Image 1 (cartoon, one colour):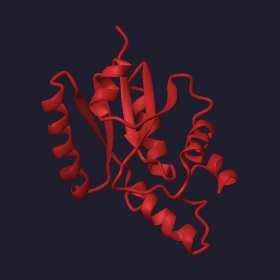
Image 2 (cartoon, helix red, strand yellow):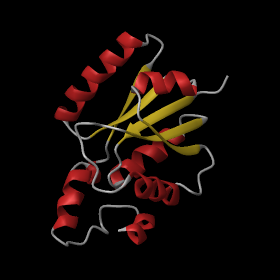
Image 3 (cartoon, rainbow, N blue to C red):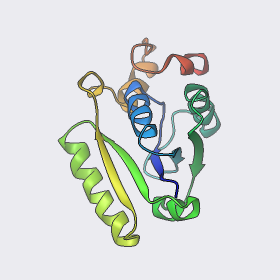
Length: 154
């Protein structure tokens, strides 16, 4: 039986922290779906199609990574894909508290769904998509914070 996982997020844009979590998680699972979810609380900076292209370019050389998007509950999307594991990256205590609450709610809706937390490497802790968007809005250089493959889309 294949062990497949979902790594959901907005990836707006994908960061080196995301990249690191995806590579580490892809080594643990037969297939890893990197999934852009629709979040009504978070308007997108990059259009969805551009974000999907950025992720496709970033993970093109990895056969067990598939880029997808969804606009339903994450637990419902996991059921649709036949996935029983959600991967989440944790940078700090605030991330952990939020993600733990989300994992509890997800498990309440689907008791077979397990959330796997991977802690960020120290060099990626200060990097977030929010900070990268602020740098972009102020015409700064983001090349130290994102995978090289996405720079052509910026």
